[in-house]
Amino acid sequence: MTSTTADAADVRAAEPDPDRGASPAPPEDRSGFLPLPGRLDAAVRRRHRLVLGLLMLFGLVQGAYWAVTTVTWNPVDEVAHFGYVESLATGNGVPTVGVDLLDDATLASLKETPTLLFRSYPYQPSNDDENWGGTGHQYEAVHGPTYYVAMIPAYWIGRPLGVTGSLYAIRFATVGLVLLSIPLTWMLARRLFPDRPVVWLLAPGLLIAVNSLSPGAVSNDAMVLVLSIATTLVFLRALDRPQSWLTAVGAGALFGLTIVTKMTSLVLIPFLALAFLAWVITRRPKVLAVGRFVGSFVGGAVVAFGPWLAWNLRMYHSTSAATVVDGITGASLPESQLGLDAVVQHATVARPGVWLSQLLVGGSYQALWEISLVVALVAGAIAVGARRRWRDLAVLLWCGSALPLAFLSMEVIVFVLFDGTGGPM
Image 1 (cartoon, rainbow, N blue to C red):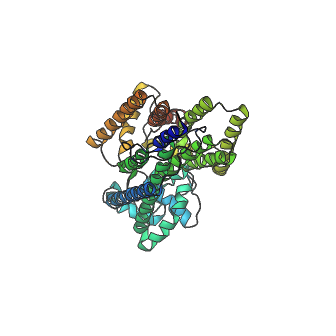
Image 2: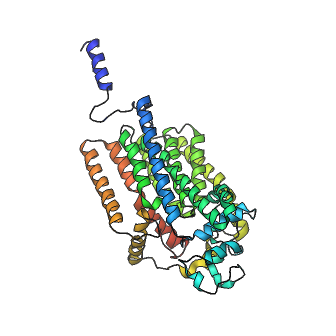
Image 3: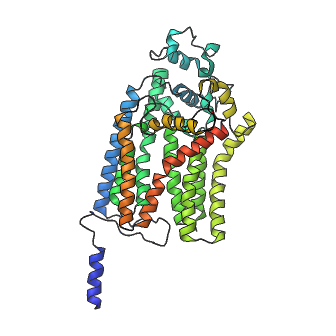
């Protein structure tokens, strides 16, 4: 082949496949682990920004709808989450579980709620009334303050309208926090499937369409979602560039903050561990590089989680306030012994929560999402396997492992850390 013919062949190979649309440039460094693709051209970049903007607008409208139409108060711990924000916003600091109680004005608002039983019972709108029991306690202070600190500005924005104004302002702020998951998911999909731009947009589109992301309530789950995606994203970047120890520290710090936000975020550990194991097997780094990465990641996590751990040791003489919370709310939570029946029961209870907010009942909506997920995973695995795209197959199976790993990890947390009290949500 002459040099002219070879050059022409190279030009043809570099042209985008018309059947697949505009393709990004290949990753700049194919020797890395899940490397990013090259920079998109200006036109494609504008289209992606437009679609992401529309997705965020859709998420805003959907979230605002549920924030307005969900009953006040949402019976799933919303008043306790709100009380945590209020304690920080009014200068009372992080509440002490078992000691600090909800504000009288908050309890008065809760008593007037027509959809709850408190209105019909002789409860006094005062935290001195022992009839409130666990409801009057600041039991959500078992979690770290990351989400609650972020909601302080919203609390004061709505404060001129009283407790109800602050409640709705925090609900809307929580919707805004969830919207950060859209660009983060786009960035994650771009790294996982670098030559499939349509997947970059499909992933955040599917994510924001799921009803469970719009609970219409004050809840730290929104922060957990955003931090979990960010942790996974930075963790993969650190594996791609292991020579940059600062990136590994950053991934560890994000992981630590996620754990501070909600201890059940420990379910991320096996998911990230699979990616780490794949890096070790495929890249075969030196032992020193592996040790440096692990040390940097753990160090970042310790720095982020350390202050909250120290707080718990000082206040509760334990790594968390879980035991104190169990004394307050344990009577209202189901208890079970480790066994197949208990695991099946937990799976049955947890399934709707993947797709629906906690106040809705599963049905055709839930079934549609579950069937779609199974079909997508199976058909996708068959398709990429038939084309011998082993990298894409491994990534797809890794993504598909997220839900099973999360459930199994939650079962470990429930039966080991909480002695069978509660269940995965």
